[in-house]
Each structure stands twice: as structure tokens, then as C-alpha cells.
Length: 447
Image (cartoon, rainbow, N blue to C red):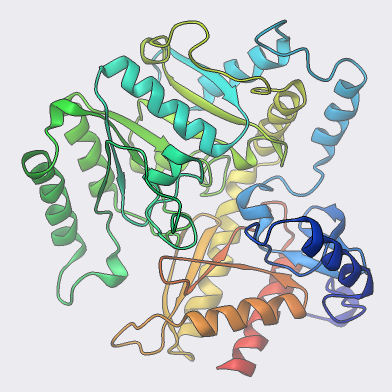
């Protein structure tokens, strides 16, 4: 890429002097348990570009962990928020209702999978959506047990943390956990036993799920199975259509509800509005958040109307759930995705990332696996391509060096050895190429 069109502009080392001063204040006032990836502070954001307080410019391939699918400060959202602020901020839907809440509920009922009657209500965070989806499933079925999958991430509140699989940093020292939560196995084709095909692994895992009803908890006591259609924190692991449809079939045969957790995968990330659409499965309940409102605190639970109506008045909801600002932002996010054809754009972004790293894989045997769905892409790094021993140290060095050179990228995975890409879907070809060129140069330097 020519220097005349270069985006990245690091004016000083990271962190710069202004960031250093803020870091000291942060250390004195904010708990160490709140993690941070980039040792600097944002001053401006536009599209796929962030500028920090010291004037350093970054290409953002993290998107606030998948929250910025429509980019930083999307114009339609900013305009709608500016207009809404002049009207009212928060009368509280539980006290006096407001139209944007109804409008966004109608829109989500329309665009989520399935032609059946649906209903939607709103909360503040992904973890809240998960907790409330579980409450509704238990209320509707009269059952208590909830199944999630190994490597799953569903949040940090008590029940959501109980459904989450990774111990450190999410669960260590925070027990005891919520009862009647259990883990079953999710496919990981790259790390399947040697000689075991994808088809064989799928069949084996589905058989294990059915055996779980005999050995651990009877199906008659299980209210729901919650699944990320693509595992997020677990390493961007994509299951097969056979596996997902098999889980749904087992649910249907046993009166178990299927909850699709679309908190990280939703709103165009995978090249469809919702990732579950790739698998031709219609969930009973869906949880959504992150990119639903361009970064404003908002989450949703959408589901079959008869299931959603199981809870009596006052049993679900919350003071700030479905704030007017969040709802008007959500409406404009969906409008932006549709009008700007960001689903198609997600597939183009994904193809570029996958193609670049598959090419690099031929040169660098530390690249063990390249995978993804749409613009939800990942690169798994290993010490040895035969043993597939995870290389967390190299992953951390790459992430840190990327930041120093103006590209924000995150790690993920049970072993911390996965580079994950969650760029805004509005990233330009030039910005993406520049970011990938930078990462490639860092591979040449470190590997």
C-alpha cells in the first residue's frame, strides 16, 4: 500500500504522555480486575479508526469486542440520538412507555429467524439477556436444568458465569456457582483426535449429549440448551450444520428449548443478520446485545410468543432496560446494516482475512488453523503444527506489537492462542489491507 494513503499514524510511543497521566489516575481509582487491552485512551472514533488522547491513530480490528459492527459513531445513529436527547432521556418503560421500544421490538420480531409469532423485551447487557432467557425457559417448561457447552462464554454475572466454561479469568475464586447448570461438548475440528473426521466427531458428540440424559440429568428436567452459533471467547470455533441441527433435533424430541446466544455473532458479523441462519435452525429464544445499538447499553431477548408470555407482569425487565436512546440507536443500526449492504460487506471482509492468512500459513507453520464465518475470523497459533501445542506467548507478543504499530487486535480461545478479528463492517479495503500488511510485517519480525 502506498504511503500517500497510509492511515496509521503513531505520533509517539504507546502509551504517550497524556495516556501515562490517565493510567496513573486509573491505577488509583479503578480496580485491577477491570482489564484493558490497549494502554491508551480514546479521544475520537470514526468508522474503523480510533484516535487516542496523544494523537495516535489506530485501525480497529477489535470493534469493542464486536460492538461496533456499524463503525464508531455511525452517522444515522448519531443523528437519531441527537434528536432523541432533545425529547426525553428515560421515563422508564415500566412507568411510562415510549414508542421506540415498541418499534425496535417489532423490527426484531420481524428480522429474527422463523415465521412464527414472536415477542421481544429489552435489558442492558448480554449477561442480563442470558439470565432472563433462562428465567423464561424455566418458567415456560417448569424445568430447572440448563445446558451450555465447553469453551462457552455467556457473561460474568452469577448465572451467566455459571454457564461460562473458561475458568480463568472468568470464574476462578468466584464460586459457588448457580446450581442446575451443566456443560456438554462442542465440536473443535482442528483439535479433534487424530484420524477422526468431522462427521465422526459430530456423531460422537451428539451421542454423548443423548447419553448425558442417562448418566447425568434426565431430559425431563432440562429446560434449555444455550448455544453460541459460533463460539466467541472460546476461539471463534465454527460448528457444522449437522451438529447444530442435531442439537436442535434432540431438543425438539425431548421438550427442551433451544436458546441461540447471538450476543457476539449477531447484527451482520457472520455475513447474515444472525449466525444461526447459516445452520437453517430456528431457535426458541435468542439473546442479543453488543452491536445491537452501536455501543449503547442495550440487549434483547426475542422468542416464540407463547414462551415469552410465560412470565407474569413484573417478573422480567429492569429500570433501564430498553432505554429510549438504546432503542432509537438500535433502529438506526438495523437500517444502516440493511441500506449499506453490510451483510455482503462482512463476507468480503472475511474472504480477505481468510485468504491473507491462508497464504501466510504456507510460510509460517506457527499458523495452525485459519477459520471463520463472514467477518468473524480467527487465526490459531501453535508451537508445532504436528502436536498443535498452543503458543500463547507468541499470540500476546503479536497483539502487543500490533498495538505499537497502530492496529488493534484481540486474542481469544481456551488456551489464549487465537488472534480474533472483529473489525467494523464499514472498514474500507484500504484500511483493511493496511492493517493486514502491518500484521504480516510483524509476523516476519517475530516468527
